[in-house]
Image (cartoon, rainbow, N blue to C red):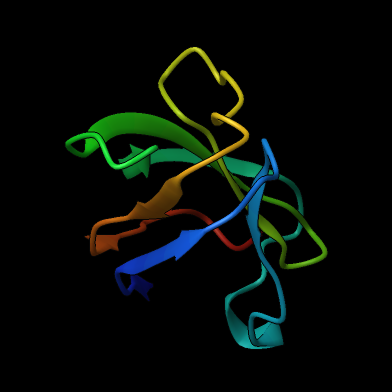
Length: 85
């Protein structure tokens, strides 16, 4: 799956993408990495999880830290490869 770049202003400490198509939803939670942006800083490699519901949860870093509750957050474009079963 290819995840496009997003950037937005938010006061939440979480970042999720919802509404993914059922064809790419895994049978159980899958983890992979990709570049995220917190509070306007340069992109950093971060943990990303895609649940069996299709919700993708992005984190600030590889330690699954929360985002800053102000400023801009987002992600750079990245490919996500995971098992569906």
